[in-house]
Image 1: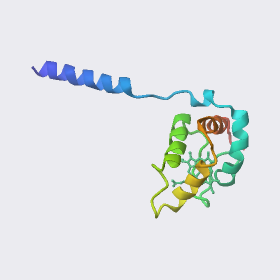
Image 2 (image 1 turned 90 degrees about the horizontal axis):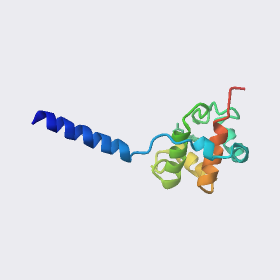
Image 3 (image 1 turned 30 degrees about the vertical axis):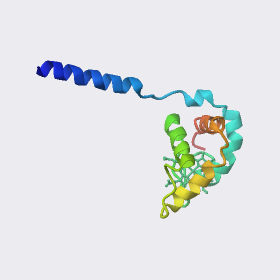
Length: 119
Ligand code: HEC
């Protein structure tokens, strides 16, 4: 009895993982050359090298997983992030996420961020 319970819970975990999407190669789908132009606005707060700025409350982007960056940008756009009335910095970033007009623009800028290194 116990054994079959264990087996069925393992099976449901496997099913759950099967339906989840894992790290896809977003950077590969983006055009870093086009993304560089989109990043010009981002550099004002996150830095030309993507190392972030404490003064601007803008976190480091350089070295971050591409799938995480894509998801966070989408979260700002959808309002899952940056909408609480006390979240001033989130609201600022939400407006910036709005400069990326479509999915491809997000992938492009993230591809460019993936090329950033310390300067
Ligand atoms: C005016 C300053 C400013 C500009 C310009 C700006 N950001 Fe931000 N960004 C922020 C701040 C502040 C945060 C932190 C917001 C928060 O606390 O939710 C942030 C957060 C982020 C995050 C979330 C990082 C994490 O670890 O969760 C991403 C991704 C991001 N910015 C990407 C961009 C991109 C791409 C651009 C250009 C299209 C851009 N930002 C332009 C200020 C800016």
